[in-house]
Length: 236
Image (cartoon, rainbow, N blue to C red; front, side, top):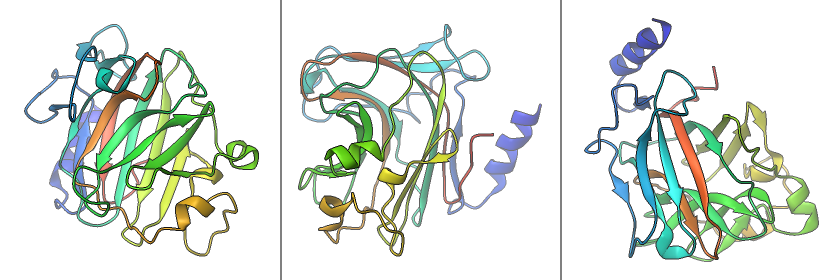
């Protein structure tokens, strides 16, 4: 009942404040949540899953293949025009490894045509990657790696982030700030040197959830209770 009230409240907000809140309890609407596989797709799969759910009975399962063409995503182009806040409950079957992978990708017009702002992992920790110059947040030095976090396996995790119109980035895992995944003017992050060399301010046009590997890594991810808003939704 409370979930239905929350969904109704979001639906009544102006489009600039609330865009998406989806738990997939009515199934997977592929017109609203289409698949996305730029350039090529061989081996990846997206499906509605009734065996795992953060709430209710359904989630979206992504079986990601190895190599770039094993990628597959699903997502939405309903993105606020100002600040963008995203909350997703995520479950993964395998830990992030030393290899570079992506589990959220966003076409970013500020970087140019067919370029993406990515969230994924490398060196076994969570990180951002800017496709146009391959910059990472945090720097992948031992010190930078220590300021990020691993993505736990086998249980649901609340992953949140903010993309500000001023170019700022903030990130939370289970409501805890990830210091290494923060780039905000006036907030010191000595491990964001590579990221902050550019003046690019992300302007994403869609948000896609899934899997992309730049080596041989494969994985299975589940996504549930996704929210995209102009204000922070939080984990509760």
